[in-house]
Amino acid sequence: MYSNKILHDLVCINCKEIFLNGITSLETKNSIEVLSHQKLVVKLDNFQEHKCEKCKTIGKWIVSKIFLIPN
Image 1 (cartoon, one colour):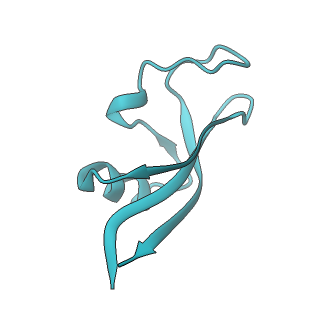
Image 2 (cartoon, rainbow, N blue to C red; image 1 turned 90 degrees about the horizontal axis):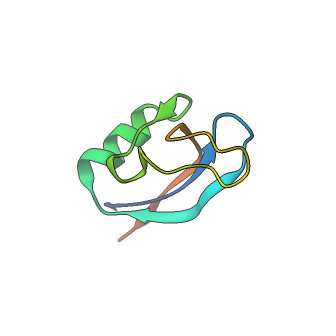
């Protein structure tokens, strides 16, 4: 049995810099979106305005790894 708790890395679409490493998401809506669009650009509400430290691209993130956390 798995909970809605999901760990994922967000990577900049432009330079592949890791923005969030193993961030935990408890927001079901965002989690489902992340799971169903793993290979696409993910626009999570909280990160749309965030700028990549390395290349200054704003709000374009790819999910690089996803794993569900067992209850």
